[in-house]
Length: 206
Image (tube, rainbow, N blue to C red; front, side, top):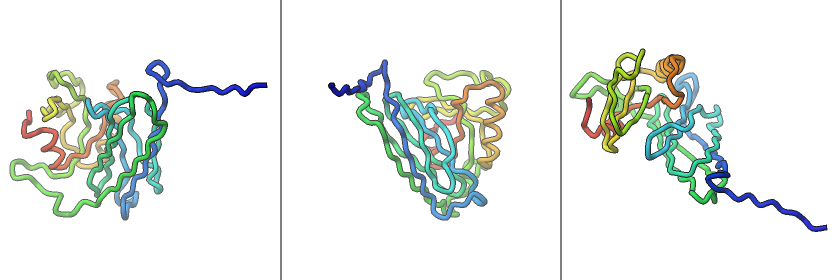
Protein backbone atom coordinates (compact mmCIF):
# COMPACT_ATOMS: atom_id res chain seq x y z
CA UNK A 1 0.00 0.00 0.00
CA UNK A 2 1.14 3.49 -0.77
CA UNK A 3 0.47 6.47 1.42
CA UNK A 4 -1.55 9.16 -0.28
CA UNK A 5 -0.83 12.78 0.58
CA UNK A 6 -3.02 15.72 -0.30
CA UNK A 7 -1.36 19.04 -1.04
CA UNK A 8 -3.36 22.25 -1.00
CA UNK A 9 -2.42 24.60 -3.83
CA UNK A 10 -3.69 28.07 -3.08
CA UNK A 11 -4.58 30.62 -5.75
CA UNK A 12 -7.14 33.33 -6.46
CA UNK A 13 -9.53 30.53 -7.46
CA UNK A 14 -8.70 28.59 -4.30
CA UNK A 15 -7.80 31.29 -1.76
CA UNK A 16 -6.31 30.44 1.58
CA UNK A 17 -7.99 31.73 4.70
CA UNK A 18 -5.35 33.52 6.75
CA UNK A 19 -6.03 33.58 10.47
CA UNK A 20 -5.38 36.95 12.12
CA UNK A 21 -4.73 36.39 15.82
CA UNK A 22 -4.44 39.48 17.99
CA UNK A 23 -3.71 40.48 21.54
CA UNK A 24 -4.73 43.90 22.89
CA UNK A 25 -2.89 45.18 25.95
CA UNK A 26 -4.47 48.14 27.78
CA UNK A 27 -2.92 48.85 31.20
CA UNK A 28 -5.47 49.44 33.98
CA UNK A 29 -8.37 48.86 31.60
CA UNK A 30 -11.77 48.12 33.14
CA UNK A 31 -15.10 47.68 31.38
CA UNK A 32 -16.79 49.79 34.06
CA UNK A 33 -14.59 52.82 33.31
CA UNK A 34 -13.59 52.35 29.68
CA UNK A 35 -16.39 50.28 28.14
CA UNK A 36 -15.45 48.05 25.20
CA UNK A 37 -12.31 47.64 23.11
CA UNK A 38 -13.32 48.32 19.52
CA UNK A 39 -11.34 46.73 16.68
CA UNK A 40 -11.59 47.51 12.96
CA UNK A 41 -9.62 45.86 10.16
CA UNK A 42 -9.34 48.06 7.07
CA UNK A 43 -7.88 47.70 3.61
CA UNK A 44 -5.01 50.20 3.63
CA UNK A 45 -5.53 51.36 0.04
CA UNK A 46 -9.23 52.21 0.37
CA UNK A 47 -9.86 52.49 4.14
CA UNK A 48 -12.73 50.06 3.55
CA UNK A 49 -13.61 48.05 6.60
CA UNK A 50 -13.40 44.29 6.15
CA UNK A 51 -14.10 43.29 9.75
CA UNK A 52 -15.16 44.80 13.04
CA UNK A 53 -15.54 43.38 16.50
CA UNK A 54 -14.77 43.81 20.14
CA UNK A 55 -11.88 42.16 21.90
CA UNK A 56 -12.65 39.26 24.19
CA UNK A 57 -12.56 40.67 27.70
CA UNK A 58 -10.66 40.60 29.96
CA UNK A 59 -8.09 38.63 27.92
CA UNK A 60 -7.93 41.20 25.07
CA UNK A 61 -7.74 38.47 22.41
CA UNK A 62 -9.38 38.52 18.99
CA UNK A 63 -9.35 36.27 15.91
CA UNK A 64 -10.32 36.92 12.26
CA UNK A 65 -9.94 35.09 8.98
CA UNK A 66 -9.17 36.95 5.73
CA UNK A 67 -8.59 35.34 2.33
CA UNK A 68 -7.92 38.36 0.09
CA UNK A 69 -4.21 39.24 -0.40
CA UNK A 70 -3.20 42.82 0.26
CA UNK A 71 -2.11 45.35 2.85
CA UNK A 72 -4.32 45.83 5.89
CA UNK A 73 -4.35 47.79 9.11
CA UNK A 74 -5.87 47.01 12.48
CA UNK A 75 -7.31 50.07 14.24
CA UNK A 76 -7.94 49.61 17.95
CA UNK A 77 -9.78 52.22 20.01
CA UNK A 78 -11.21 52.49 23.50
CA UNK A 79 -12.26 55.32 25.79
CA UNK A 80 -9.34 56.77 27.75
CA UNK A 81 -6.58 55.41 25.49
CA UNK A 82 -4.77 56.56 22.36
CA UNK A 83 -5.75 54.67 19.21
CA UNK A 84 -3.42 51.96 17.98
CA UNK A 85 -2.74 51.11 14.34
CA UNK A 86 -0.94 47.92 13.31
CA UNK A 87 -0.27 47.07 9.66
CA UNK A 88 0.08 43.63 8.13
CA UNK A 89 0.28 42.09 4.65
CA UNK A 90 -1.35 38.96 3.27
CA UNK A 91 1.02 37.84 0.47
CA UNK A 92 -0.25 37.18 -3.03
CA UNK A 93 1.31 33.70 -3.03
CA UNK A 94 -0.74 32.69 0.04
CA UNK A 95 2.45 31.55 1.76
CA UNK A 96 1.22 32.64 5.20
CA UNK A 97 -1.50 30.82 7.10
CA UNK A 98 -1.44 32.79 10.33
CA UNK A 99 -0.49 36.33 11.34
CA UNK A 100 -0.01 37.34 14.98
CA UNK A 101 -0.65 40.93 16.04
CA UNK A 102 0.07 42.61 19.36
CA UNK A 103 -1.24 46.11 20.07
CA UNK A 104 -0.49 48.03 23.25
CA UNK A 105 -2.80 50.94 24.03
CA UNK A 106 -1.44 53.89 25.97
CA UNK A 107 -3.64 55.86 28.38
CA UNK A 108 -4.50 59.35 27.13
CA UNK A 109 -3.00 62.11 29.21
CA UNK A 110 -5.47 64.63 30.57
CA UNK A 111 -3.92 67.48 28.62
CA UNK A 112 -4.69 65.67 25.35
CA UNK A 113 -8.41 66.41 25.81
CA UNK A 114 -8.89 70.03 24.85
CA UNK A 115 -10.71 72.58 22.73
CA UNK A 116 -9.13 73.87 19.54
CA UNK A 117 -8.42 77.54 18.92
CA UNK A 118 -10.36 77.49 15.64
CA UNK A 119 -13.63 75.89 16.76
CA UNK A 120 -15.43 74.44 19.74
CA UNK A 121 -14.70 70.77 19.05
CA UNK A 122 -13.42 68.77 21.98
CA UNK A 123 -10.97 65.96 21.33
CA UNK A 124 -11.12 63.06 21.27
CA UNK A 125 -14.60 62.47 19.84
CA UNK A 126 -16.29 59.78 17.75
CA UNK A 127 -17.90 59.70 14.33
CA UNK A 128 -19.40 57.07 12.05
CA UNK A 129 -17.63 56.89 8.69
CA UNK A 130 -20.19 56.21 5.99
CA UNK A 131 -18.03 56.06 2.90
CA UNK A 132 -14.65 56.98 1.38
CA UNK A 133 -14.59 57.83 -2.33
CA UNK A 134 -12.18 59.12 -4.95
CA UNK A 135 -15.06 60.86 -6.75
CA UNK A 136 -17.28 63.01 -4.50
CA UNK A 137 -21.05 62.77 -4.15
CA UNK A 138 -23.48 65.30 -2.69
CA UNK A 139 -24.30 64.76 0.99
CA UNK A 140 -27.97 64.44 0.01
CA UNK A 141 -26.98 60.97 -1.22
CA UNK A 142 -27.12 59.83 2.41
CA UNK A 143 -30.89 59.84 2.82
CA UNK A 144 -32.18 59.90 6.38
CA UNK A 145 -28.84 60.80 7.99
CA UNK A 146 -28.48 64.27 9.52
CA UNK A 147 -25.33 66.38 9.76
CA UNK A 148 -23.25 64.46 7.21
CA UNK A 149 -19.73 65.92 6.93
CA UNK A 150 -17.24 65.51 4.08
CA UNK A 151 -13.46 65.91 4.33
CA UNK A 152 -10.95 65.70 1.50
CA UNK A 153 -7.82 63.90 2.64
CA UNK A 154 -4.15 63.87 1.76
CA UNK A 155 -4.71 60.41 0.25
CA UNK A 156 -7.18 62.00 -2.23
CA UNK A 157 -10.21 60.32 -0.68
CA UNK A 158 -13.44 62.13 0.18
CA UNK A 159 -14.58 60.80 3.55
CA UNK A 160 -18.20 61.10 4.62
CA UNK A 161 -18.98 60.99 8.34
CA UNK A 162 -21.84 61.72 10.72
CA UNK A 163 -20.21 64.62 12.53
CA UNK A 164 -19.28 64.83 16.20
CA UNK A 165 -20.44 62.18 18.67
CA UNK A 166 -19.24 62.51 22.26
CA UNK A 167 -19.09 58.86 23.35
CA UNK A 168 -18.39 55.48 21.78
CA UNK A 169 -21.70 54.16 23.15
CA UNK A 170 -23.65 56.89 21.33
CA UNK A 171 -21.68 56.25 18.14
CA UNK A 172 -22.45 52.54 18.36
CA UNK A 173 -26.17 53.29 18.75
CA UNK A 174 -26.11 55.63 15.74
CA UNK A 175 -24.29 53.04 13.62
CA UNK A 176 -26.99 50.50 14.50
CA UNK A 177 -29.72 52.98 13.51
CA UNK A 178 -27.99 53.64 10.17
CA UNK A 179 -27.67 49.92 9.48
CA UNK A 180 -31.39 49.54 10.17
CA UNK A 181 -32.00 52.10 7.41
CA UNK A 182 -30.50 49.62 4.95
CA UNK A 183 -26.98 51.01 4.58
CA UNK A 184 -24.08 48.62 3.96
CA UNK A 185 -22.51 47.06 7.05
CA UNK A 186 -19.02 48.33 6.16
CA UNK A 187 -19.70 51.66 7.88
CA UNK A 188 -17.57 51.93 10.99
CA UNK A 189 -16.93 53.98 14.11
CA UNK A 190 -13.82 56.14 14.13
CA UNK A 191 -12.29 57.76 17.19
CA UNK A 192 -11.05 61.21 16.18
CA UNK A 193 -8.05 62.92 17.76
CA UNK A 194 -6.50 66.16 16.55
CA UNK A 195 -3.51 64.21 15.22
CA UNK A 196 -5.76 61.86 13.23
CA UNK A 197 -7.88 64.76 11.96
CA UNK A 198 -4.81 66.60 10.65
CA UNK A 199 -3.59 63.42 8.97
CA UNK A 200 -6.92 62.68 7.28
CA UNK A 201 -8.00 66.17 6.31
CA UNK A 202 -4.62 67.67 5.55
CA UNK A 203 -6.09 71.05 6.37
CA UNK A 204 -8.83 70.73 3.72
CA UNK A 205 -12.29 70.69 5.28
CA UNK A 206 -15.56 71.00 3.42
